[in-house]
Amino acid sequence: MNIPVQQLPSGGYGYGFSDIKVSPMSFLQITQYLEGLPEDDKLEKYLYEINNLISEDKRILDCYLMDVDFLIFFKKLITISGDSTVVVKIPCPKCGKIVDKKISLDHDIHFRQIDQSVMEGSFIELGGNKYETIVPTVKSFFKVFEKYLKYRKIEDLDIIKTIALVKDFDIKGNQIEDDILGATHGDITLIKALQELYTNRLEPVEVICPNCGTNEETGERSGFMVDVTSLTMDFFRDIRINCPIDGTKIVFKQARQG
Image (tube, rainbow, N blue to C red; front, side):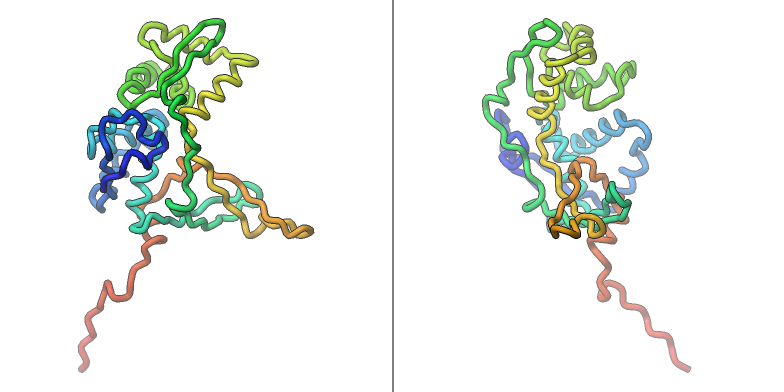
């Protein structure tokens, strides 16, 4: 299926194409995906997820990273469900109860509103040094990412994404890295603001636990927030949950009498 770029977190700002292709995975593709998925390496797993999208549409390389993070989730959602809604099982952080939460792409998935001036980048000062920021595409992110995949100096994906926001990494890579890793006081606030602007565009989803989500005295309900991109799924389990088998799908032969 083709998704209009206007429906992505960036709003499609500056794209030279009108849509991007993302399709649900078939039984064979899910099996191959699970066989090749790196389980215990977050960096290799992220690379694997992106390459899974690139294999279907090469234009992913020219998509902003904020959009690709959403598309990774979206491809899983449409694989599991045919109507853009999905039931996920989430443990309550207070009591541990597994809560069934139905998530709708239309009603529960929201992007923080983006401004065109934000998409143009900015000028910042970190560690006494002045920099220009960019909105990284997959292609520009890979130039930064490949260093950390190879040398493993940093293995925190959020930090690597933040480093990729700063222009001229190929020239000032060590300085940029030092200024971000060594940030203190107001620089920390600045870095967190950049992350909110350019990487964390999806609003978290509220989940209410039936055990402890209601105040017995006031009757008020309060839940816990879940990061959408953290809703990684067990494909075959979740397909069974969201698409239970219909009694008409299998008709057993009648046993012969006598």
